[in-house]
Amino acid sequence: MQTIACPQCGQEIQVFLLESDYQGPLKCAKCKGLFKVRIEGEKLKSWEPMTEEELKAAQEMEALKAKFRRSPTSD
Image (cartoon, rainbow, N blue to C red; front, side, top):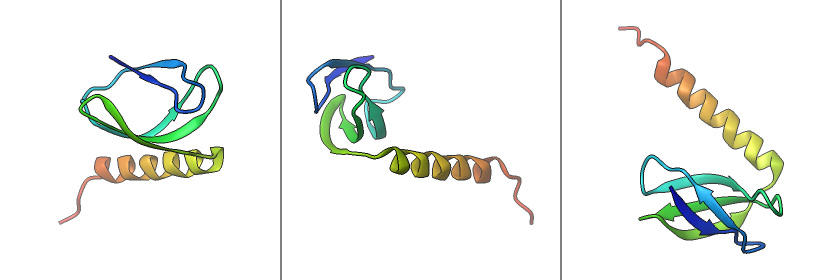
């Protein structure tokens, strides 16, 4: 677990990561700000605001990727 400050309001956000690097969406529980973040070595390296539509599109893309990873290959 690591703690980073919300880029919008400064609220501390506890982030539970399996690895020290992460790239993807992050939502602040206090201000409800939604961001696309890049965390490297457990430090916030970059962030940019993200819309709900962008979040939904990213989630759909990840679901498709997961579906294809699970699909058996046909030889």
